[in-house]
Image (cartoon, rainbow, N blue to C red; front, side, top):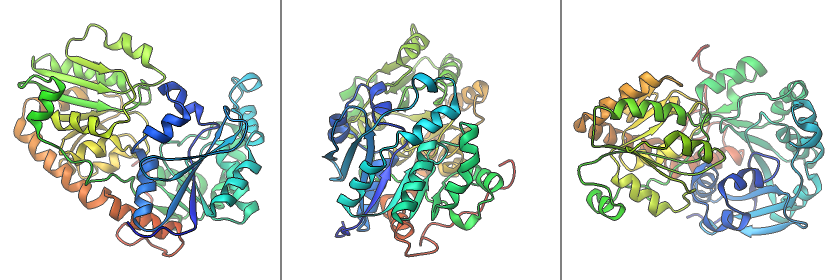
Length: 425
């Protein structure tokens, strides 16, 4: 790892307060610092560290009376918790513009500014831009005369008329937008008249040296998977609509009907866990492990034991979970949601079968095709691993991010500046 610069990039994840993310998972801030791994956020941290750039993560919290600095166990990155309040309650319920105004008003500007100063941050990087906290952070960056960048991770809807009035001005304050979705780049160009030169196609990273399949038989024995089972896997947050889990279960029932040895394992928890429990009740071919898995060795063991991976999200930015599966040599059945369509733009040459979002029939056919064809699974799995090594590793992504966020290059070397997709892409 390169010697870290004394300056830091401040990363502001989406949301009013960190509890919006942690509470549905049954985690607290200490769990977050001690146990959370991977994802786009910690992938960014690790990738930047590879190229000498220090990253600091800053959240508002409603459960601290004073600012508190934690340290992320895996990466050593500072995590600041700044006292704040969430905005989606009381008068804001059902009134999007009121909520947006409250998001702005309840932004802890002074607390954020102090954390930035304490860490020597020389730029702000905000997760997603279609929410009112982004507008507030754009104003903060302007007041502090710090560069502002944003990364697209799935938020592509302007949520209120108030935001629609000011969002364009906030976006124009950005030095750059990291947007690995061609469809989203096209939307930004059309709606906000943003120049293609401002938008950069830098994917989310995955550590290809860490995410590598182990011995399949040993993994299956350790997990109690029957030797003859054909195992499909999905892992991540349990959000039924966003993650397309209703489509997944319906498609799986059709595909598995002709394959008695087929098994679907889902790892994860989230806000829809009770409804999902009802959805998978009495399905003998489905095994749901209802816990938010923060243990990479355990996830790798499941990926090593699996035969294929499936993700049928309706909404995504560029998800890391399928990249982890690809790095472990698994073929993927994926929807054409944001990010997923870009990961598998090469189709089978990139290791995936892509189906329309919401298409139960399309997903069932793709799953059935892979369940029935071991040679095809192996061919796609090899292509998936090669794609990760070439484009999504910490080294190429970190080089591109460090160059962009340092303002040292107009075009990050190794990854291209994006052009907008054709209309309708």
